[in-house]
Length: 258
Image (cartoon, rainbow, N blue to C red; front, side):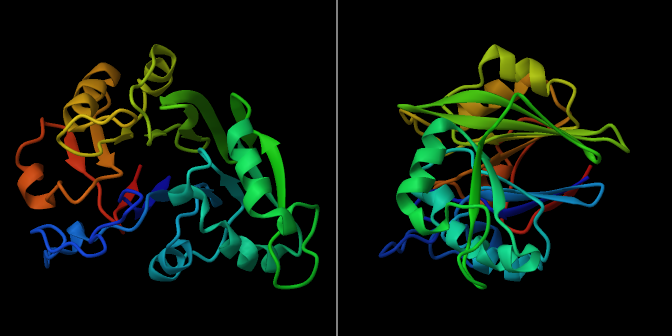
């Protein structure tokens, strides 16, 4: 299994507009963060999770040329605003892309992309989305994708666990959440690695801060944890030296072989 971190930043991205703080002005490429999403490859099955406003640029940068499954964790702008660029992958298959999501996510897709809802593009070059409720388990010949609902303010976001058939390895992805409920902890406990929402040092009403994410990492007990969805208050080099053993900061372009 390969996990590609396309983006690891918040809704404002880093550097932020009009900000000249140390992180926004940093020359460390790990401090340059586009909005959060990942691309997972299981035995040749390409799964895209969310489409940030920089989705096209992320795909070009990481040479993403294939997309078989798309999962929208929730309908917030920094995760859905790049979905129009899925049109390129509709061109490849000349059919709609199945979008697995929550009820809230589906409603947002319909509101933002009414021209794209259907079984096939209205014309070559257009996107087309077939909306499907994300089940507890998605079965593919290449493996399984498990889902659990995570609290994220007034909405719930999809937490995902990927299990590759050939290797039996698992990877858990729990971004955009205020906590990791017991069911999600249990689902991820035998994963080789987990990615958790770790917004910033200070508390936030709808996201885990770094301390809360480290506590959740301890409860899950995976060998390696990565934090994502970070603001400009998180300097990569500084915070990398302050995290517990087995916890690290993700960065745009990070690739994991699991």
